Structure formats: structure tokens, C-alpha cells
Length: 255
Image (cartoon, rainbow, N blue to C red; front, side, top):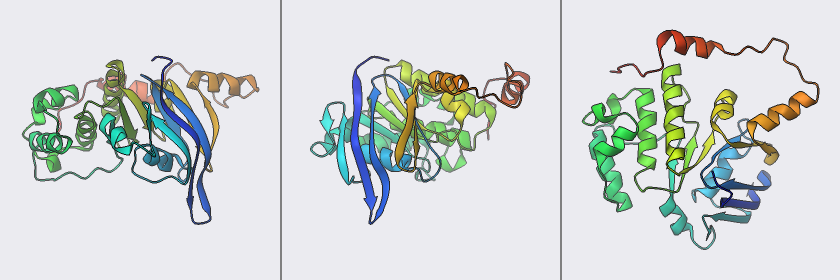
């Protein structure tokens, strides 16, 4: 992570008629960090990200992405971002190689399907049809497609929802590896343990406003400083750690 700002959002607003979904949000994302946007359903986080991703029009405010102004250069922004949506639509009867080649054509990018599948541990499924993949495999493949255009920034929307513990931990490793290669990662999740483990910083949104923004450790320290105590003694491990320890970290062969 560097101190360079790659995304700058200033006083962003989004209205639907009289309803204010996003109410003057401002934040910055640093190059090379994993930044989490957290909030309950309906808080405005998905709307905020879809605006930055050029998928939804804003009502007001300014958005800059890697020096490009959203109002003036949306096409340039699209070239440098990768977007993994919570529900992705792929041609179910095509193989993974065929889908990657299709996306490469859409991006006008040369692709090496097997190398790309290696990055998400799916080489052995190269000739499998998308409809034959498990939930975890579909999530990993979805992330692979965000990397086809070699983006500077990727957006991941609840990437581990519905995954078993091994698949979830494996996806965490994948997200870290993508960040370690220099790609900035913006993630939404409802799993607070996931945000605590992965994110360098988080912004918590509620009712269309950012109510806190800092590293997870500092946010926790601030809460503890108020005198907050858990009703149950904090242990050095949790049940998921027990499960992984007993069953192994490695992904299991999946049909």
C-alpha cells in the first residue's frame, strides 16, 4: 500500500425521486490497499460502488479514479477497473476457456486462459462448462474474469457469500495475492471477521452516510476505549479456526 490516492469521492449524492440513497459521501482509497465498504442492506454501499464503477449515474458530487473524472472520462475508467458482481451471468454451456476467450475479445485483450485459471486454482476445470462448477469455483472464476483486462482496481461484491470455510479462506488468500501484485481491491461484505482479516481500512455506511472510517484495529481499539466489553471471554481462536484445523485448509476436490 502506498500513500498515493487512486480513488477520490467528494460529496457524492444519489437520489431516487425524493429518496436520498447516498447523502454526501466523501472518502479516498489508497493505491494498493484492500478497502472495505461495510453497511447493512439498504445503507447505500452498493449504490456508491456502482456509481464509481460507471454502472449507475450519480445525482451530485465528484468522483476521480486514477486521475480520471467520472463525468468526463467514464470510458477511461472502465479500461482500468475489474468488477465482480454478487450475481454474475455467464453462458452456462461454455467452458471456462471459451468464456475467458470471449471476455478477452470483449476487452480486446490477448489472453492466456490456462495462466489466468492458474491464478484462481481452476486449471483442472479449464474444459468444464460453467454450469458444472460448484459455488466456490464459480466465485473464483468470476474473480478471474475481473483480471482479464489487467485492471489497476477490482471491485468485489460479497465474494464469499455462501461458501464453505475452506473455500472462504482460499478466496481470502486469492484476494491478498491479487493485492500483493499491486492491484487495489475494493470489497463489500457482511462478514465482519472477513473485513477485519482482509481490509487495511474500512468505511462503515448507514442510511446513506459514512459514520466511521479507519483501519479495523483502530476502530476496535476506539470501541474498547469506551469501556465496551464482550459478554463472553474473547478466545484466541474461533469455531471456524477449529473447523479448518481439523479438516484442513486445502480446497477439496469438487464435482
